[in-house]
Image (cartoon, rainbow, N blue to C red; front, top):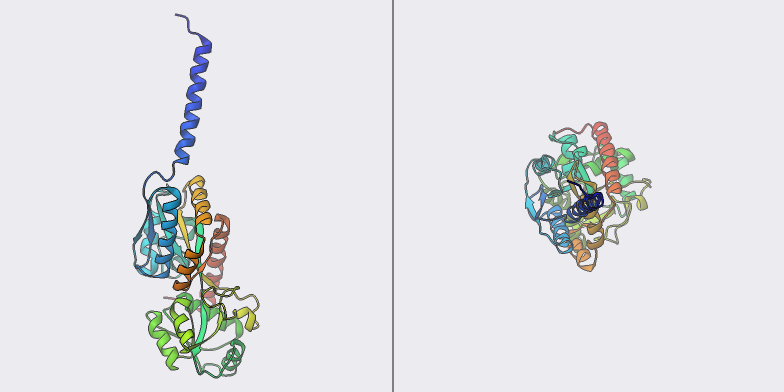
Length: 325
């Protein structure tokens, strides 16, 4: 039996072309089913709200449902640990933040590390605001610093808990300026802020979400925000860098999407592209402003740098300040 070589070659080439086309089609098909976005906090918090906004935009842009599921507990580490163990195929994402990715492993003994995740994109940042009671004698951040420096160990600062972003920001602020003040940790920021407003505690760094209405009503005095740029929620409040000697001061919380390490680059790139293209617009800005968070997207590489830099700075700060759970 004779076989026509030209026919065989045609069949082989056709099969190869089909295989390549089929492979490319499979790659382009992501997502082909529902994507789970895990929020390691309870519903209603800033991370949850930002994740739901991103999930809604991704659902509309990518033609599949991105469903948010809350897996709270242990300072954000329960949900993060769950995602770290899942298959790295892009169908389980984490709405991570400073608390779950940085302080969780460094301070709370989490079973994972930042390297166990692949950054997708930032979706928001949260600056912290330096506040005192409304009638405290200092009229500016520098005047507040002068009073605190001249009276070591006389004053106190509050936080929502040991290792919280407000605590870390205050520790960095006081350490770099040579301020000696006593830390008073609370279980959450509500009671802490109440005691600052009454004068029971001198000052604190808190999120715009918590303090914006009190600033507007005159119940607290806002001196400065911890970010290098002014807050979109409180644009009239200067930065620490603008009002003190700390010209490079910049410490914020971030919120972003991450996937398990090992997720294909094609999937991560597709998600990043859609976030940057669709998490925009006045509706997003308006929603974020009500939450007290700032809109921020990024490349994958830039988000990786944010996490690496934060891990180094927070790790050093924990050691310098002797912060332990």
